[in-house]
Every structure is written in structure tokens, then in C-alpha cells.
Image (cartoon, rainbow, N blue to C red; front, side, top):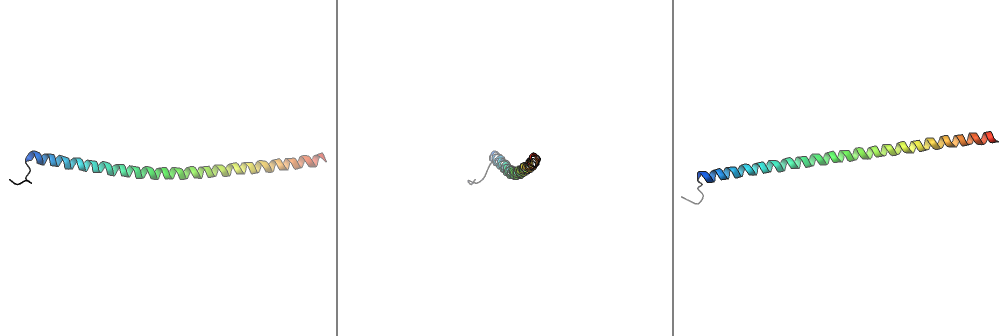
Length: 83
């Protein structure tokens, strides 16, 4: 018998070890895919948040501009009426 012959118990152990290694590799691959997907989702959410923030800023600026225009116009009307 040479040193590389395995009995049935050792073969079963080796087979179980290979199966456990394959399962762990699949887990690692799944976790890597989930991490990549989560990163992509996070990136998309940040872009939407930035876009939403930009839209909000534009809306507020427009509101302020409109309010100032109306206020200036009203001030002019009052000044013309007071003279």
C-alpha cells in the first residue's frame, strides 16, 4: 500500500471536504454579486438624490425669483400710486 491510497472513510472525508469547499466558494461568489449589486443600487440612489436635490434647488430659486419679481412689481405700483 503506498502513501496515496485512501480507504473508503478517507475518500468520504475528502469528498465531504470538496463539497464544503464548493459550497463556501458559491457563498463567496453570491456575496460578491450581492455586494456589487448593492454598490450599483447605492450609486443609482445617490444619483437620484443629487438630481432630486438639484431639482429642489431649482424650484426654490424659481420661487424666490418669482416672489422677488412680484414684490418689486407691487412696490413699483405702490410708489406710483403714492405720487
